[in-house]
Length: 231
Image 1 (cartoon, rainbow, N blue to C red):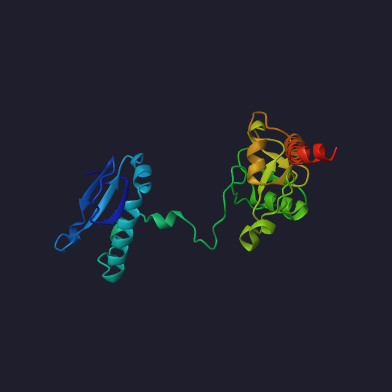
Image 2: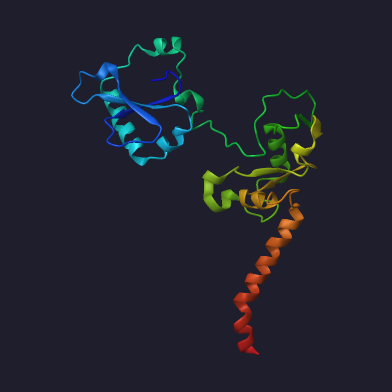
């Protein structure tokens, strides 16, 4: 068995996943019900593994057993020496997690003092500071359909919005100065997806006009027969 890949601890799984190799955990072989390692390599098989509901039931049982009798206590340093890392290290805590949007990849660049309006970003990066300044000016209401997630979902929707770059960064090809007020607009995910339904992207005005046409069409269909009846 290769030492490379992703390993998931399971509790006696009674299922098989294509491309996933199962083997007993050596330190639990003497147990009445030994634990099992699910090994994924190459990584292509990981999708099939995590998409199997029974895997997570088995993983939950294994986790409960570990919590009751932590058999791996003291092995953390050994795992580090072997180049192993826990999957949890690749995720941020839920209270600090930030959604990553297609056009909003955080950038840790420190901005120069006094940069009140313009933000320097790389052509293939999106800057969280540019996003913040855009929202400070326009708010979080969609510029196309006027949806505000806080009004629809309450507190969990507060502050949620996509930021659309009027000038596609993939077409710039070099570092440039982006003006958060002139170059960016807040849009909801639905409208953002519609904007990028073609290449080059639709303008905000085009998508807004399409939405308004459909609203008028729905309105006319709703009232067509009552109006005919009144005539």
